[in-house]
Structures are given as structure tokens and as C-alpha cells.
Image (cartoon, rainbow, N blue to C red; front, side, top):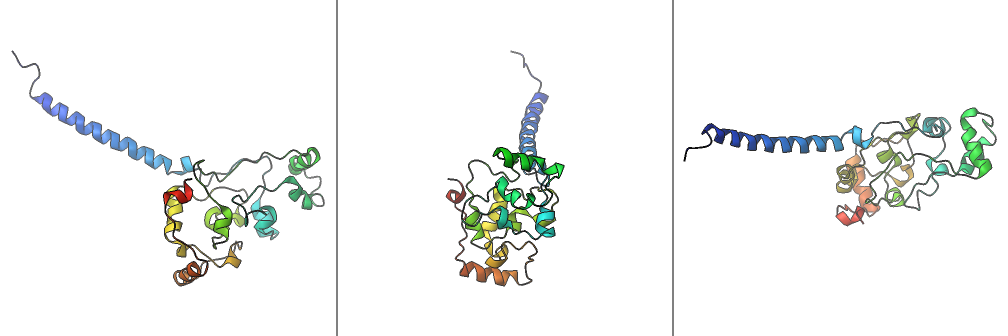
Length: 216
């Protein structure tokens, strides 16, 4: 019986296998790059809110402590979105007729909460406890960035697992004195390595990298 395929088809077959394999690798690489890029993580992307609240004005300008609005952050897993009455503690006396604050006043009159858009969003299968990190000397800025210099809030970190693990594996690089946790002007000293090791011992910080720490 005559040969159906010319010998060169062997090379075509081998080439197709190589090209197919490289294509799979390229696709997986492209997907990996996409899921780590700001296009997916939404880093440095301003989020449109019902009221364009400026942290820069309230934190840096007026010196309001983070805990005034996020009052549950030291004892709860959630930092918490402040209820309208917290806003009205000030705005019942200042900027009382400002058009931009009408949604705040309407919320207060009707007792209906404002539907703020969440900026920092973790996957549903990830457990994160704010109080655990705050009480171990991890400052707000480590995760949320220079909030005091943000006219509009945005996410500065990827919030992906490899980013979290960098801190969990090397907590001495990120920990700060507990009285500086809410200090947005704090800068790490030149001897952070020495200070960090000391604080890790004093605050009994463990390098937790087990899956069950976050995935529960």
C-alpha cells in the first residue's frame, strides 16, 4: 500500500506539538500577568462614591484620627463604614447647606444608610481581621497607603496572596510601635531591622503562613 503522508509531515506534526505547547504557556502567562495587573486588581483606580469624601482634607487638613470614623477597627474584624450620624456630628454645624453634602443630610433625615462603594475588596474565601493586625503593630498605611494624601480614596496594594505573604513571612520589616499605628506621618527608621525584631518579640508576633490562617 502506498504511503499516504510524505515524510515532511513528521516535521509538521512535531512543529504543531511544539507550537501548541508554547501557545498554552503563552496563554497561561498572559492570564497570570493580567490577574496580577492593575487592570484586574484595580490598584490606583478612583472609585465613584455617592459623596466624594476626601481623606486628604479630613485627615491631613483637619487632623481627624482614623478611629473617629472607623471606631471598631481596634476590636473588630472590620474597620467599619461610619454611620451618617458620625458625619453629622460636624456637618450639622459646618457646611450645613453645601450641595455636595445633600446625600448625607438626606440619609440623616430618612434614616437610610448611604450605599458607599467598597474600595478594598478581598475574595470571599479570604478571612482578614483588622483588630488582629492593628494590635500587632501594623499601621493603617501599610495596607491602605498614604490615605492622608488622597483627595479620593483608592487601593494602593494588590491585596493578592503573594503581597500578604511578604508581610507574614517577614513581619519585622513592617511592624511599628503600637502608638504609631494610626500615625499617617510615621516613617520607618534607618534601623527598622533591629526595631522590627525587637517589636516582634515584644508583641509576640508569629510568622503565620499556614493556609488555614486566611482561608477558613
